[in-house]
Image (cartoon, rainbow, N blue to C red; front, side, top):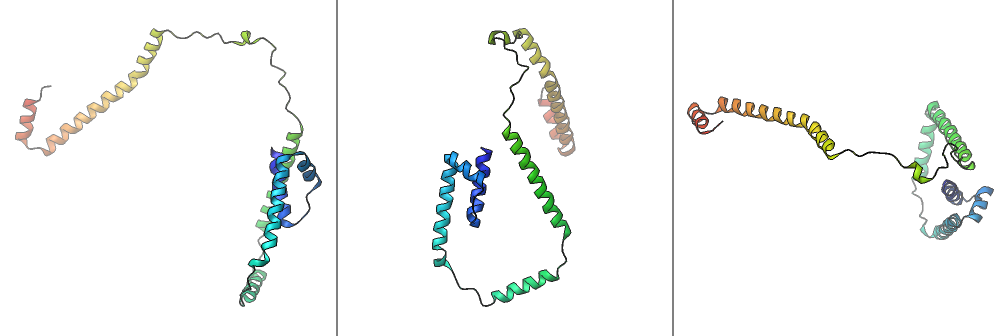
Amino acid sequence: MTTCWLCQKIVSIRIDAGRALPRWALSHIQNCPACAAANESATALARQLSSTANDHRRSASPFLHGKIMLAVRSLENAEPHPGRSRLGWAMAVGMICLLAASMVWLRYPPMPDQNVSKSPPAELALNVTLPSAAQVDQWTKTLDVPLEQETKLVLRDATVAINTLARGFLPEDLLASSTETTPH
């Protein structure tokens, strides 16, 4: 699959550039129907685009030459950036190493695991005892205790906050009448 992806990328790049395909790509295309179809499709598209390209040509702007020359002159006066070339080289070397590692990895088939015993499936079954209903009930109660305590604390804090706000903002006669009718 990785080889097909790489082959299709190479085919696309080489056809766009009008260059011949490498030998390994040609041999892969002969053996892989999907890549052969992709190659045929890309070749047909390139032929069709190049045949209609002359119909869509427009004349260049009369000021285009001056703009291009101005840009070239400004690039000549600009200082070179050595960091960009180093980054490009570093990326190229990294990609080459990655490509080499992937090619080595794809060449060697995975080794079968030597530690796996050849025992029948019945011996591989796990001996697990399931908890009883009483144990599950106890675990549920134990896990619910912190949540219940936190809920009680939140309700108590909310009650204190409401009472404090009521004492601070309600008139005394309304506050006294509300405490007489509310049972505790």
